[in-house]
Amino acid sequence: MTWSPATDAETREMLAAIGVGSIDELFAHIPAGLRAASWDLPAGLSEMAVRDRLARLASHNNVCLVNFMGGGVYDHFVPAAVDALTSRSEFYTAYTPYQPECSQGTLQAIYEYQSAICRLTGMEFANASLYDGSTAVFEATTMAVRITGRSRVVHHSSLNPIHRQVAETHAANLGLDIVEGDDPTDAACVVVQLPGFVGTLADYSCLAQRCHDAGALLVMSFYPVALGIVKTPGEMGVDIAVAEGQSLGIPAGFGGPYLGVLATRKAHVRKMPGRLAAATQDAQGRRGFVLTLQAREQHIRREKAMSNICSNEALCALRALIHMCLLGKVGIRELAVQCHSKAEYLKSRLGFATLLNDGPTFNEFALRLPRNAQDVVERMAARGFLAGLPLEPLGVGGPNDLLVAVTERRTRQELDAYAQALKDTACS
Amino acid sequence: MEFPDDLRYTKDHEWIRDDGNVYTVGITAYAAEQLGDITYVELPEVGTHVKQGAHAATVESVKAASDVYSPVAGHIAEINEELEARPELVNESPYDNGWFFRLDDVESVQLRRLMDAAAYRVYVEELTA
Image (cartoon, rainbow over all chains, first blue to last red; front, side):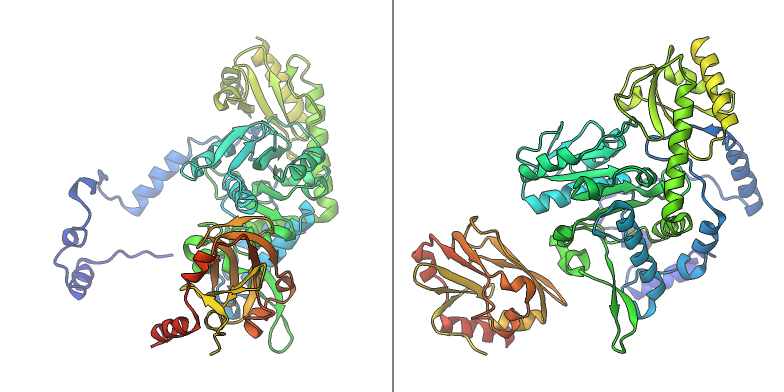
């Protein structure tokens, strides 16, 4: 898209039209102390010089490392069809689908995404998506606060510490009492993660029952790919299921864009944040799609809306939908089996380190190495591996603890080479 | 527009009626007309206590969502469960089948300070003038 800044003549014309003499005068109501004194920007460059500069910067990235990094974002294969279909301008340039008469494609895509998420999770309603997994955790907790009228939120130790931090930051001025543990007494909700941040799987059905007996909700942050073989949030009795949807056809990028998944039970749908697409019939009886239950949202409910979320990640949700459709029910199971089996194989080759998980794992596990994990990661990078995520900086492990993730992309040769390299670097 | 004489009214367009042991609350014909076709009513939980002027219910229509406040303090003794399946009763019969909830343990002094039908009619006429 071409971007043309306003010319000096246009700026003068606009200022004259609103009766203001200069740009400074336009911003006069902002106290001088709050205005930027200077922007400290370098002089402009030609297109050719900019391209060279960016190419040089990009060359510092090492995109060839064999990836064992996880912790919420995973190196899954994305079929070319996902990029090709999502790049169609009908989807790529679409605006907020407030007008169903000119937004049927976008609305149908959202409706099908919601349906696919419900099938995957065993939940009854999914919204049109949120920004990412961490903000979805926050939205689920405030949704539980609205439903129960309680202000205590319990974060289970399995929850991703980064998601926990984002949720706490968002809630900083909301007067919530956020504690750690699994006691649902007087709580709005207990928030668990499946698999846990360090990879351990657990069946939270009993905790769901304990939550319900105490009048609390169970919120679960789940790893979408794992649901190919693991008991679903719906089957465990979860009330609000959320996820980072990146593993469904979205590349791992520094800071996103990612996909916040949120699904719930019918009983709670009116307290759910975010857009919701629905199927209906037009005046001639033809099937069509609209946004529904909009009285929950900001443009109708104003300051009493369920959330200040008034957008969604439509393009990322579309990627997730296309990815799920390409895989199908059998494919998602096969993908999950591949991730799990390859991780189990790698585990069996790492006898020199101590496995820290106290239960079964899906595709990720925590190791205690014979030396500092950050050192090992740096040495492994020199040997062509992104070895994993050191746990100590995140406050969930010791200095020698490393979180290792394995996806379907890793070959047996890569797993063997990784095990050997890790042994060499960690034990030498 | 009908504003029955045996009711008391609030500036937020709720009505309350003395039914002997309990007091019945709903929204006025004017409020229902202003909201348009009502699609959902969220009612309070039976057994809870509400303060005078506190949020007690929410009404959603095709064009807006509005809070309903309790005209007086009291204890929620009963709710109109029929509204869950038939929210349109609020439009069709605002003072009868479209009632919202019933209160007991009400202080009658709060009730006497509310508008009577004549005062409420004047109030609505001023709003629409």
